[in-house]
Amino acid sequence: AKTEQTAKADGTVGSKSQGATQKKAEVVNKGDYYSIQGKYDEIIVANKHYPLSKDYNPGENPTAKAELVKLIKAMQEAGFPISDPYSGFRSYETQTDRYSARPGYSEHQTGLAFDVIGTDGDLVTEEKAAQWLLDHAADYGFVVRYLKGKEKETGYMAEEWHLRYVGKEAKEIAESGLSLEEYYGFKGGDYVD
Image (cartoon, rainbow, N blue to C red; front, side, top):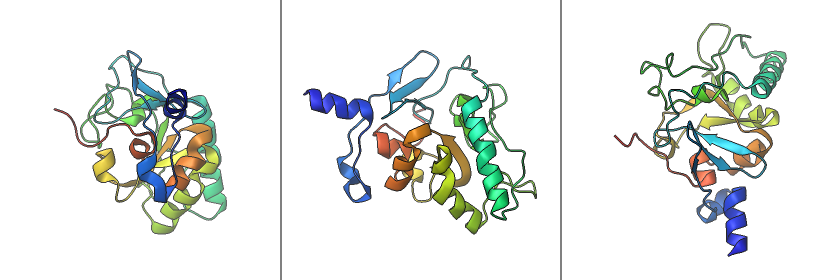
């Protein structure tokens, strides 16, 4: 039983071909937010099943922001027309339904999610830039959060521009090809109500 508990706590999973065998991480209600224990760090969970409190207002995570700035610079140096400005933290009050999530259900409220924007002012959707993010975001501790083909699991449309900072475990998550819901085994999909 100890081995099973350890596997749950560290979020251990199989490879793409063994995706069905991953262990389920326990989602814990921390009052203002929900989280699971990842392999290295606590991972805040924010989706249509696990809302954030209207009082949860951490601002932008400084580590995540610093890594995003490095990622943007690397994209620019690789020749992609990426702007320095990005869309980051949104408080409960500033998150509206005009975005893809209701207030309290957006990862932007965690201070760990960022939308990459092109120099044209639009969200980055160009195929080569999107592929660069899939290939390199994990080098900076990010995963592309809403992958194509994972809409049912996440409850959100694919957003190749939406990055979520998860830290050291990002490479393992990205290589798995799984959504966070699948990787850690927590519930996703559409709103409960």
